[in-house]
Length: 337
Ligand code: PMV
View 1 (spheres, rainbow, N blue to C red):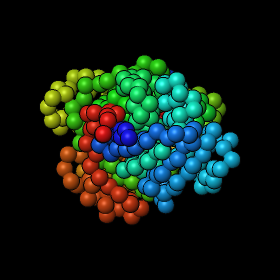
View 2: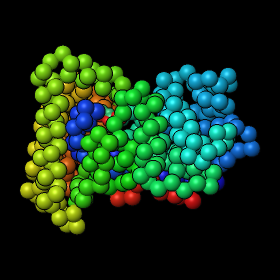
View 3: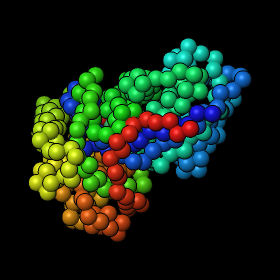
View 4: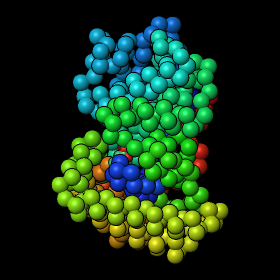
């Protein structure tokens, strides 16, 4: 039996614009998905995921999830989750040159699905690591990131950046621009996350931004302006001492950029009433800045605040189902067995 975990992430800056070649800075957070893999004697795959969706699911199939005769995955979120797990299994079989390998897979996740915290990337990254190790192959985190990206790319019909999967595999703060991915030396930023209980449809939201960008030059300019915010934010991080607590000046400046970034995402139509209300609750709770994280439409916001005030303000905000502090995860994918 092999067990691997991988962290979720928040976007400090740059979601959506990263799809069009602008840079983004996602940061891995200490909320992890854990995948347990036991090789089987046949070529079947059995997946048990109690907490990945509201009521959990068990699925067994042979072949692939969309062609196997014994697959019954009617619920959309289950179908989406199974798409990612199946793609991770394919990557592991390919990496180990074992096309007929079968697995019993258990997925446990503390990351809400489709909420902008990189749940699918964490499951895919941990899944590839656990399944390849179960077949006796050790991949380095860069290769896991690359294979996880290919898995997401396939499931999302080509609409995926390398951001989520690279952050989850490597841990820490990272910078992604097209195919260029690297670690960023950043101080431990005091992230607070608010969750509205919802989920956005990433494919639909990305398509909406693409359509706006094609229709209006000013929408294309908005995407580029998000890239400018990321570059400004990177300069601030590069000047900071990664070993020290972030200074008040740094938090002030990063917070201002997060607020600006949220405004531009709102203009691109990917926020929602509840995400906006959580962003405003965080700001009134004394956060240095706040923005939605991930695809938007519903899900999570991220704010910067070293005190408990923002978390408390969010907890008392109607429509907020969870508010928690999210420590930077300095380790990405790791073996837990
Ligand atoms: O909601 P998430 O965590 O899957 O993030 C999506 C981020 C986008 O930039 C909108 C798409 C992508 O693949 O980068």
